[in-house]
Image (cartoon, one colour):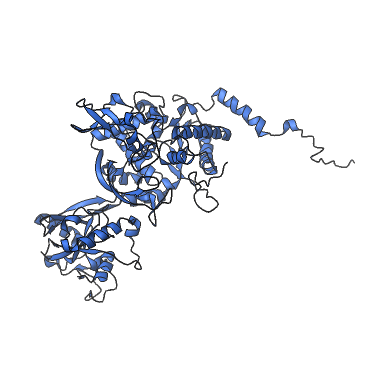
Length: 610
């Protein structure tokens, strides 16, 4: 019997030629795979189609482990679907326009075009090192005129149909980034989500997309989607459907104040009115004696976020100011005072409320703070007599109407249709559905984005350019340091144009489009990326879309995903597709945090390389 032998690293028969050396082996096989084009996708290959998509990255830096984590599992699943016999499209591109890329360029003292191109080249190499299953012939880069040409084309189609318009609005302004912000980009304490600067409100004329035209459909079709329930709930809440009635209160200055309420059966209990500080009637109805105090309050309220203003925290003192004006309650002709207060938002309903303190908690707290009358108009069935003097909070449960004229004794909820029908019959109000959702503000006072395809003429006003003039090219020789106006204002060659309607001199629009416009339709371009005559061929898109599986972070639950759904419905109504939802299935991965516990971020320099 011989003794068993063991080997040590020094005596092992497993020689170096058989070791896995990634620096030698992987380049060999990457080159072989690329030469064989094993990831090239043929539209007409056999098998059922499977369009798997991962949210494309901002090339404001290079890929970090968060991108790696977000991409790896979808890549594995796409390979599995291919092994199962599917014809799989799993493309990649770069969300190359917008604030992240522009700020990175400013920070690194390099032109956004140069910085973006360099980062994209590095990212492509990183994906290749990963061995990703990407067909690079279908790559989409949103700062390429071949892509943003079609942003401009979609804008013109929407402008023609009344879905794009220009209007004045009160918007959040970041003095550091020198541009407007969406409400959800303003954090508690009124700071910019991206840079941390303190922000404030400004009145600016802006471009909007009329997403509210699709509010009900956006709400209804959530039920058809295989999406995480958390995401669908966030979108439902953001859309915010409310049923109620619109009432008109006459003002003593001869104008009418409209309010929307979900509880028109409590109108007999309205003892004062409250307007949002931004309401356009505030300046006209305020009396001279109250003007100084009102204007000071309006200025203070503009420094608060909507989240802070809507707080029901009892420890937060209620603030407001009397305008000196009065309105007439349309159901009992009672003269009631008109106040302004920051808990009423211009972005919801009409920006004005009838205050019913006995049956609304914020109205109750406000009435208590300022000594305003409280009148019970819904009496609980189990309480003999609800006394306003002893109430500790408002009552909004079941009961019967009291102090309400001919409706006394009517039970809740039968009271709602009864009062609405009577208001309509009397011409004092009508049933209405309203939404929290507001139109999408798409203007940005920055350089690195899609130019708007319109000009301004002294004779003709705003004039859209003909499609033959597209694309309007973003000049690469512009001075892009932010000043509060678009840098394109200072680029005379870009600014100077000719009116297509009358031939006279005109000025180009100098704002650029929100980068979310790019990401609202980019996946369609993957199906036909070289098309120079249309955003995509409907026949080619029909082979692949809608996307079967979309993967990305839950931080995009509202903005990107809601805008993408809106754009898909518009594209359907343009006749390019025959469906209204872009992503059949959605899956969210988790988020890898930086060392300090925040989301890993290129803009904050907290990323870790893969």
